[in-house]
Amino acid sequence: MGKIIKIENDIITVGNEDGSLTEVRVDDCNFNPNVGDEVNIFSSENKSVCVKAEPKKEEKSDIADMVKSGGININLSQNQGSNNVGPVPEGPYYNVGSKHAVNKIPYVLFAILLGNIGVHKFYAGKPGQGVIYLLFCWTWIPWLIGVIEGIVAACQKEDCNGRILV
Image (cartoon, rainbow, N blue to C red; front, side, top):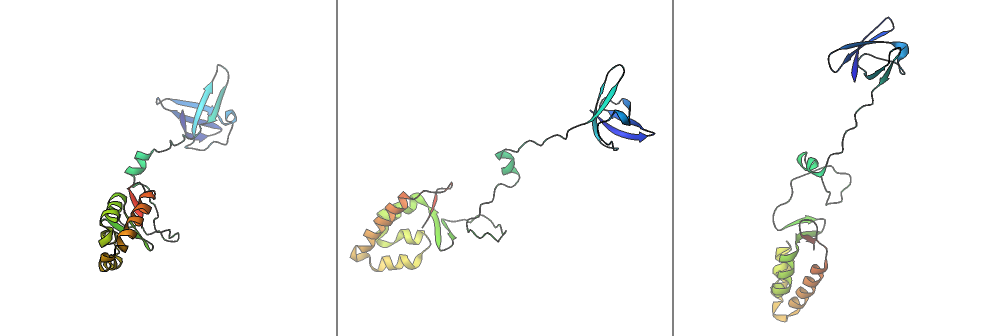
């Protein structure tokens, strides 16, 4: 492969990769040559043909390259018009609309074992509901609701981080 370095008087001068120069007539090209075009030259004893080289195709990057370049953004808030990308939330929960994302296993264990005093509600970031569970814990109703919420949460499919929405 070579590069066209000069066009003068219907003669094209091509610089080859090995440092040599080749001269070809403009009539021997199957395209309109310009200085800087990459070309391939095919020669025989009596004829030369100059063909424009195809640009190299970029290889598709793999997932490791995507992670190195900043990763993939996932919009949890479903706010399609916004391009605001903030830091990943820390702590046991974060808000997604009116729901809270929590780690599945601790939430299920808290709901089933300590549902009568509302520990799972405090863990999910809903302290108002947790206080209501504490106020009525003597009636066993919060325990029954906690067991049901634990079973429902255990049946939910978690995301790649092991979190569910409650």
